[in-house]
Amino acid sequence: MSLRRRYLSLGLGELAAAGVFAAVAVSVVMPRLEGPKDSAALWSALAPMLVVLVQAGVYWVLARGWVEQAPMPARLAALYRVFRVLDIVVLAVGLLGVLIWLPDHFVTAAAIMVVWAFGVVEYVNYFVARLAYPLRRWPFEVGKWRTPQLVRDLHSAR
Image (cartoon, rainbow, N blue to C red):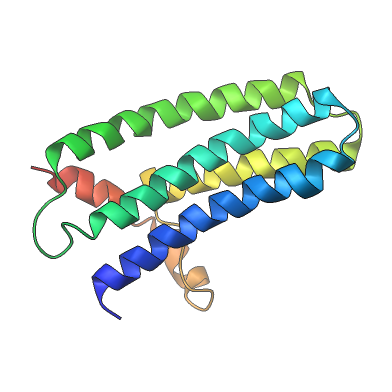
């Protein structure tokens, strides 16, 4: 598989994941929640994750335009540098919302915290250290704290 095709697959996969998470939240999870407080906690956890997933999906799709040809365009790199900082704020505000509206039921509260934590994992995977590897290689690779491709592209931007 060519690198361009792989990037397209990664990008569309992240965008599809964001869509599926949002659709499941609206159609399956929200009807089972006990009220607006629980829904506010859910969206406080889910929104930051969706933001990171959409940014990642767009990055992979756009990266097809420069991969193996040129560095990441400077304006796009500047935008993703802003995202890198802004996403921390979005995650922090999301956590604050989760804590303010934390559901009374332990299982619901725990599930919402897991959703928020998954957003943190996605952020780390794209902006701090690569965490995503094929399952067979994961135990051997994840501890190496490799620089994510997005960060390498930010460093090489024109």
